[in-house]
Structure formats: structure tokens, C-alpha cells
Amino acid sequence: MATIDGSYGEGGGQVLRTSLALAAITGQPLHLDNIRAARAKPGLQAQHLTCVRAAAAICGAQIQGDALGSQSLEFRPAHSPQAGEYTLDVTEARGSGSAGATALVLQTVLVPLAMAGGESRLTIRGGTHVPFSPPFSYLQHVYLPALWRMGIKAQVELKRYGWYPAGGGEIAVKIQPAQQLLPVMLVERGALRKVWGTAAVSNLPSHIAQRMANRAVNVLKDAGIKSHVEAAHVEATGPGAGIFLFAEYEHSVAGFTAYGRKGLPSERVAESACHDLMAHHHRDAAADLHLADQLVLPAAFAAGASHWTTCRVSRHLTTNAWVVRQFLQVPINITGGEGEPGVIRAG
Image 1: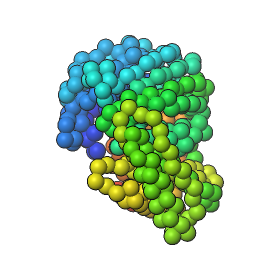
Image 2: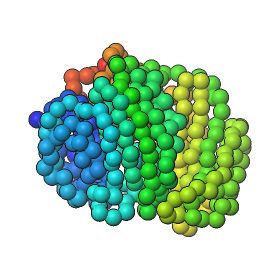
Image 3: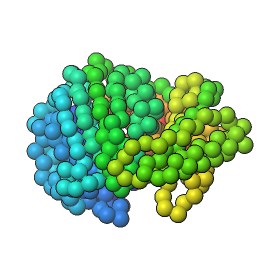
Image 4: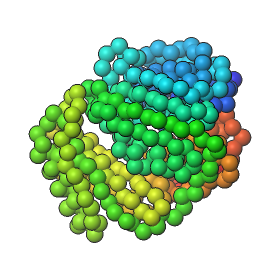
């Protein structure tokens, strides 16, 4: 049994999700303590409980400790991950509305299902555009294209937006079986081809989206970066606002997000996403700081050595590498201190 201390490193849900994926793939039983110990509300919240039950569903795992607020979990897979059709609803974990991140639920089961040998179809309900998780557009334009190059072919469709805190969003996912996972090579990003994005609002005045879009274009223009940012009013259960920017280079795409909140001017929201984009652009690295840690798990199962660069080494990255090492005898080396540009080699 793999025994994992959930308080290690970033001490949040990343430890749980990566551990569940690894346990499902390897068949190794898992005991996890101190779940999300570093968070203001420790233990399993609705999104994390959905991840546990989703991972259990695909490998028939017996689980103990699968309750809201639980800080300890045992997870015993009964068989290898099975392809199929699954409906994963974050609201079922709480019994009421929840904006738990659909993207993070997907990331828990995506690699295991890609290695399952058959096509899978998922319906995931909850939050699609919420803080501290990849928004749907990041999945679509950054994360899944990077995995496609590794042999993991997944397609996503946004059925309905779900903002924090109302949730109510839905995505549909089709995962094709991967014959073999290929190593990732993202060292040189090449020249900047274009910058684009969307400023979106729901159940708020449309001018908010236009103000975000205009400000983003002007900030980037002042920095010498030409961009195209659309303003959109989208349907959703509750109110929400956010801007989603993408920088497309010859060999990679990077994504940057900022969300509105009450009392925060639209222009400041746009500036936040632009500043993140420019910080990445001024560092000659292929993967943004979020993609860098999300590549660790598939790279650990690739048939060959992977090599990628990142604009900033995050604690999520170093934590993810540590969790993988608890299950697999795969070398994962990270050069560069936390907050600095880094180089990652796996396999």
C-alpha cells in the first residue's frame, strides 16, 4: 500500500488527484492522510469527493473515508481502469449546487481512461470557469493539445458555463484509447504567432465584458503585443465574469486567466491576466507554470524520456513529481528554484 501524506508540498487537492490516478493505473492500494491539510477548509470538499468516487468507478475500488470533510482515505482498486460512459456530478457529493471544478475531476481520470484500451465518454457537471482550476478554454486550447502530442486523444465540448459559486456547468468529454504514451518534448517554444482570447460575462451588464476586452488589447498593445480579444455574453446559472487569454507560439500555447469579483473594476481583471501573459512571454520557456505540472503524470508513463521547460517552477510541480515518485521508479528531475524558470526531465 502506498502511504501518502496529504500535507506534503502544496498540501492541497493536487496530492489527492495525482495519487488517485496513480493508484487506479498501477492497481496499488492507497492510504492518504492529512488530506488538504494546508487549506482553510481541510479535508474532502465536493469536488475532491467527486474525484474519489470517479476514480473508484473506473477501477472498481473499495474506498473508506469518502465523506465531506474527511482527512483520511483508503482506496483499493479491484481491477485496471475500464473504458465506458460515466456521469460525474459534483452536486451529488454535496447534495446541492456546487462549483467544484469539472476540469480537475477530468484530470483525475483522463490518463487512466486513456490507458484503458477503449473509448470513454464522460459527462461532468459542476464549475467550468472557477478560480484555482483550469477553465474550460484552457483544457481546450492548452492542456488537451499538449496531451494529444503525447498520444492521449481527448475532445471536450462545453455544454453550459458554470461560474463560482453557483456552478451548474457541464462539459462532455470523449477519450480515445492511447496505444502508447509518447514522451513530451517542449523545450523551445519558437516565435510568437498570435495572442487571442475571450472576455465573458453571465447575468451581468454586457459592457463589463467589453471593458475587459478593450483593456486587455490596450495593455498588450502598449507592451508591443498585438491581440484579438472578443467580448461575449454567455448563458449560465449564476453571475460571473472572466477573461481568458492565449499566447500561441510555434511549438506551444500558453493560457492565462483572471476572474471578476464584486468591487473589482473590469479593467483590473484584464490587467491581471495580461501581466501573467507578459511575465511568461518575457521568459523564454515553452510551458506556462500550470501546464508544467500537468505534464508530469502522463510523462511518467511515456515510452521514453520527456523534457520540457517552464517559465516558473511552482510548488504544484514539485509536489506532483514527489507523488509520482511514491508510486513509480521513474526519475523526475527539476532544475530551477521555486518561482524561477525551470527545466524538467522525466523518464
